[in-house]
Image 1 (spheres, rainbow, N blue to C red):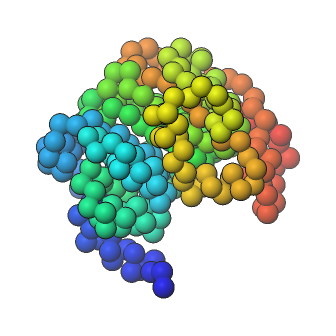
Image 2: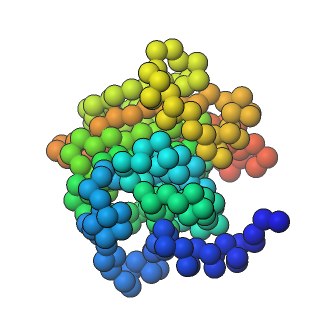
Length: 256
Ligand SMILES: C[S@@+](CC[C@H](N)C(=O)[O-])C[C@H]1O[C@@H](n2cnc3c(N)ncnc32)[C@H](O)[C@@H]1O
């Protein structure tokens, strides 16, 4: 029988690969390992990759298995979801994995300058009404720059046309170097085997959206340290299917 939330929270409290610093805690206690993840937790000099909004942490765990010479940290605020990945990593003896339970709005409190090489955004909520909560918005890019290496890579994998279109404009408007982009990942020719292996890791949300017949979109771009970042000023059609089973909150057809 699967565990209930309370049992999962009890497990999380004792797991060595889990750090729990939601906003309420992080405000009181400074995060001592900031800038010291490699030395104090991973005990190596390998690159660090974050999965932001990791949910159950499928990308974090599967990438860690594919790349034992890199370190992976899944970040989310939902502990019961994160429990799945944290438990799997412990059961499989993966030493290059950690999970951080916190609000991504304060992510720069946990990592020092240049401490992280890559960021994955996997099926992030598009936040169609609220760009400041959108994980690929310039306000988040500003936070990521504080700890990502100069020109470090940001990956976005999503079902959402809204989020993908928004991020495309954000990248173009700020002249961020685009490395790869496809609107239909599983029907794109010419992707090399290594990349295909990484991209074929499926998250819980990815499987759900694919079952509904939606395209999976993917892009990766570099985030240099220099230059001012500006929000693109464009109207983007809303993803209709996201109000499926829910009443529409407004009559709007587009948003910024
Ligand atoms: C749609 S789910 C995707 C989960 C997973 N990546 C997947 O593909 O199955 C979005 C996740 O991001 C997390 N999330 C969204 N905004 C967040 C924030 N500001 N801080 C922490 N977690 C956040 C949510 O808790 C949720 O687990």
